[in-house]
Length: 388
Image 1: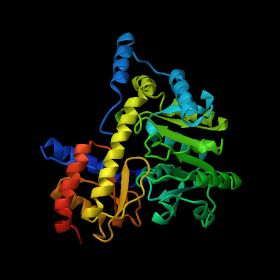
Image 2: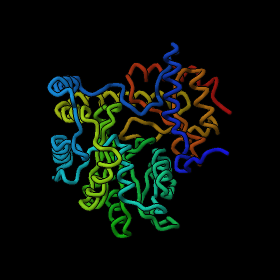
Image 3: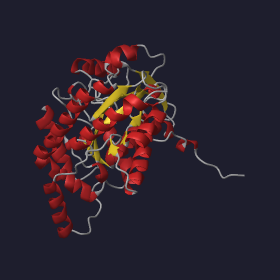
């Protein structure tokens, strides 16, 4: 008889990372593949921040544990960022540095919800939301959005829910669609959650990566929400695994106790690098300018080759494409694109299990040269090969 396994780990594969692994393996064998699947910047932290990290290592090679909630030096700097970016004054007692945005989600969900609670998440949406919740014994209530609401939830969606929810996750700018929740709607959502005693969790990982209209933090409208952010996207520190939480005071103690026992402390060297990146936002803004250029290229070139049903991307580095006129099997479509055109994209079923068979996510976080080459390859491949 087989030994027992936990049903908590019985969660779907994260296809974007699965595909990244396959592409990396094939690239290592010499294949020339264009990455439009990975949600990570092609550049890293500013060189000055890395040089600073080298000085830190030389001064203290031990690099011991920091406080469980992160170095006060870094938490102070994050608080200054909120003041400078949003005009919001923040006490660092509300801030926790975490092991990536992923670690922040786990700490937040563990501190906020009981087994059996119900948390609403929009679809299409970031796949691990559902996986986090399922592994913790929390029920996911899906809110099906569409292009009509810019793939974002509205108060009308919340009013239409057939069951009482305990929490709501929102994401603006959103993965996989790159869309924003308008400030007026964000304010309404915050007010609805307060009125109905629903804990609001705002995923703001792509703040700083916007094109024209800036993303507004839900902190503008409520002090009861939990905000998650990360150094992986705007700050281009994906592999350093560092993020942060902003919490109401009553949540901080719970997060601290969980972090001390489950994680001990965030990575020390990564915290030093993150601290220094704030001094070089000109470099980071240069990355965003490149993403904007890449987006402009895709919005011009893709419709001409048949990918003309695109999300209204205003932030992050994704386009969400409706391909139902080309295929009803996004996974097979992406496999053929990879094998025949040597371009990697992520099938929509990663983000929407029910309707994602007719969509794909296109990431444009790479170099402009790679985006232009991808368009050239797809232009040659799509008219002749798509369908089925």
